[in-house]
Length: 200
Image 1 (cartoon, one colour):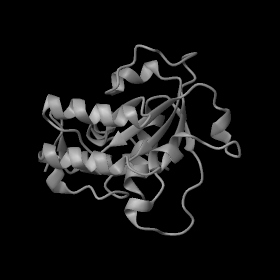
Image 2 (cartoon, helix red, strand yellow; image 1 turned 180 degrees about the vertical axis):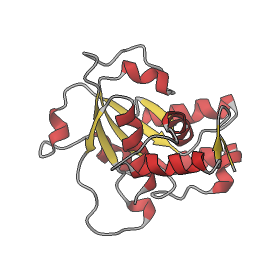
Image 3 (tube, one colour; image 1 turned 45 degrees about the vertical axis):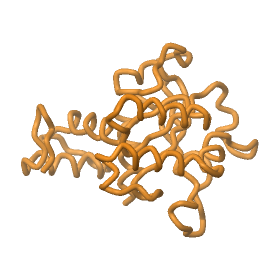
Image 4 (spheres, helix red, strand yellow; image 1 turned 120 degrees about the horizontal axis):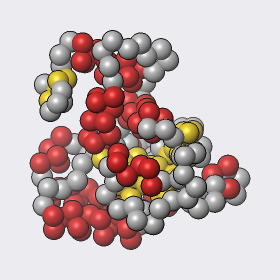
């Protein structure tokens, strides 16, 4: 079970998107920092085009402005991200500078003609990241780095997980949806509480 992959799929599907794996995952295991990024193709059938007014930092409330996109993930499992970076803005800035080097983002967001995603038409290049700096100045630097790398918008794993926690219900059966089943169990055993959704 790839938890981050399942989280991404569950998040977009539960918010009304059609979702499928994009591109071709690596066939051979390689070092985390060399892996191509896991990418999903998302499509929102409820709107006719991507809204130009969507902000760079995206929240669930912004999803109704997205028609189509490719969503890649730089996460805990495919990068050198560590717990210590969560509260260290300087380390986070170095992390993002390192992650945009090479062609990991470029290959995820620019599908070749042999892939179905190349026929998507107009789409946004979205990136899911483990965390953002707390300092506004550092956040601005990170946004600049990612925009320069061709990213149109970002979401954080934390905000996606919070949204899924809010949607999960202890009394509901989630057949075929392992990620929601885990969240349900967390609520049943009071490991995640609303409204603050504190996890401990």
